[in-house]
Amino acid sequence: MFFGHRPYWRCYFPNTQAIIYVVDSSDTDRLVIAKDEFHAILQEEELKGAVVLIFANKQDLPGALDDAAVTEALELHKIKNRQWAIFKTSAIKGEGLFEGLDWEMERKCASKEGKEAYGLASLS
Image 1 (tube, helix red, strand yellow):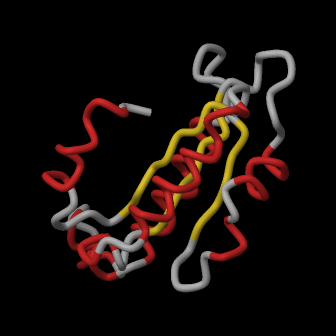
Image 2: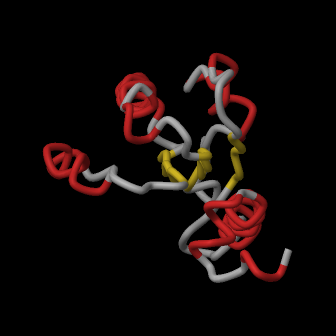
């Protein structure tokens, strides 16, 4: 996470259709901070309609938590008002990234706003 950049996050909130949240699955000590930051972001008014994609990254490292453990640690079961998904990823190996982005793209294209943003409104 870009902890030093937190003050600038709000600059990117307007018109956001999807949140991609990357968690270091091997750093269990920081998962509490990641959970708190994540749920704070979800409370932002400008992000209310955004779908949420969570990458449980660094799956290539020994001791990395799997997606079920990260789901529990981030308390994803508390998310009731939006679509979300979690994918196990290894950015170094390129694993899980495309599957997650495909999921996010399907959600965006399924919405009217997403179709308009990608110039697909006339195709439906």
